[in-house]
Length: 544
Image (cartoon, rainbow, N blue to C red; front, side, top):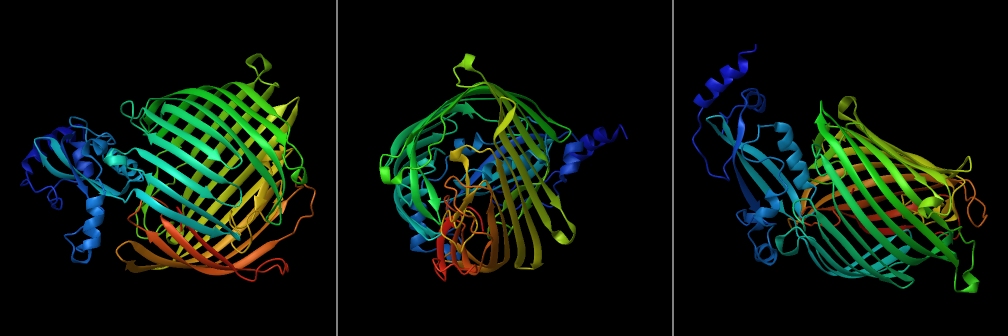
């Protein structure tokens, strides 16, 4: 067996194939991935083909509107695509790296699809074809949504692929039930070299203003060895207490956050990655009474936590590509491997904080392949502080999402979410309503120290492709939930809430923005006379 790699190295160059055009399909005589890896093949030439938003070589997309869209859109530049690749000429051939490169490319919102394919093998070298399909990234227009009885309105000038560079620039105005917000933001993950980026934002709101700046290099791939980041965030705003979806009391809040961290990893080892992080954090929250005495309510206590922290993250490399799960007709990359992280920090008056405290943030997730093609995705988290021997602002929760194919174009979906709190800060109480899963109720209809919600859906996917832009689906659903514990205003708990409904789904396959448009009719079932008999929900989301 020890001679097998040498034998492959002698035999595989004999399997020469005729070079082909970049847009041709891979030849069937190309050795498979296992054979190439066993033979010690290396990466040869890497050719990049960048596709427009619409393929005008297809009769159904050869129309003036589609040609105009391609002409107005600046296609992603080749160097932008190339710097995202995890492979380069001379590297050992690895199917795992090709798969991870595809996921990394698809994770960029300005690309709607990506494929990396070996196309030619000779003399121990494998040539690759990298194909990307652009998404529409310019958003000059008006936006709006209606959810939970509240409407939002906005207009923006946004481009998430500025001049084809992968940078994002946004100038926006948004108005909703909480505030009017004007924002200017810029993000470029490669401004100072590969994966050394900048994220900056200015905000001018009806109830305050703020700015944020972050510089850093993330753990962008499983085998990334170093990462770092620094950030500053300043914000003033007015927050509200809600009763049956109405703003009944307010307080003012001022945030001042500064952080810096540095991370190291040994990279991918035996299908697993371990990352260590070390940092300093200065986290400050100051609170003031509402300016309007008729809106005065409880004022949270000020908090100032300052000191060092240490973190660890562990990832098991197990992914699956799926279609028609949370999107319609698009490739979805789902991490099924165990992933967990924890950060433990210490706040001390010696660092300028207002208290000595130990704080903890943890999160864990995992997916499970079940019989009959079913899938279960789970996650859980725990946050809190230890002050003077007592737990403060302790919150823990979990979520489980179950998917089961009930037909070629049908899927049953169940989503169970629960959150529980103990000794919460007044600004950290939870709300439940139309904004987080109870589609038949106004936003923030109930509040408390925690909540539990169950949503059941029968999803339908069709082959309809409206204007070559929207893939069509639908859903019949039921939501049930309730809050637990006290709320800041001491109001009675409304008990168990439930609704049923049905809706239309439009999967936007060509846009970099929200991928699924929801149009739902939801009917609350608890008989409260203050509720509408039917709630219309129109909004754009990232998922089904």
